[in-house]
Image (cartoon, rainbow, N blue to C red; front, side):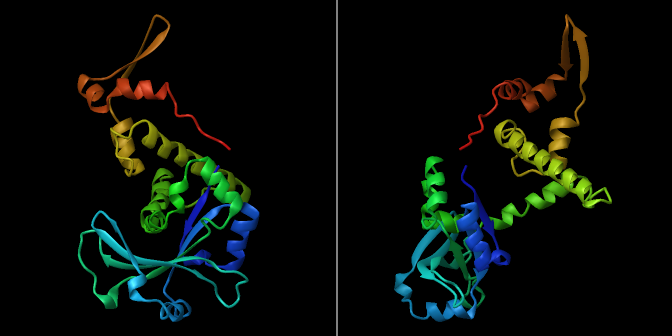
Length: 247
């Protein structure tokens, strides 16, 4: 199984990188702001060396190089990005461009690279894919509010750490099943990006009646609900679950 960690500058640390590379054997994409140590190196690069990457209306200019801090033992893959236009196509003035540096070990971690290749994930070796993945962090952070909404409240319910740990693991697994159901089963009924309250309102909170007949239990709903939720197709998909692939 191939794993990629996408994080902000809070994980920008030599010890963390070495643990990801040498112990966990996983890929990482860590994004940080443009600090003076990187800007001094960038002063040696020619503006003509930058390439352009466009995703919908968003445009970045980028350059890839090897970089290391003074305390590091080895160089790491670094991608410098300069945002040219936002997601609405609006050009950004030079003094307010959110330039950033992306550090990753794609193509530089043999074990993780081999795992990714076995999962047909070669596209993630591509520089533009790494940039796109890095800029999805804001969307990924929406998972945390979604987990809180699924749990109804933010506070853990128990006094002892062990019980709260078990509760949190159950909550995380439940949220994974919830997201998997939206992705694999109900994607054309409830938007994948919807929060738990929206899912409950559309998929759970509707009028129905259970009746028993000939040793079978029947779910009775109105024709409107049946057509709106496409219940026959949802039931068929539930009977043909997606196969989980393990290494």
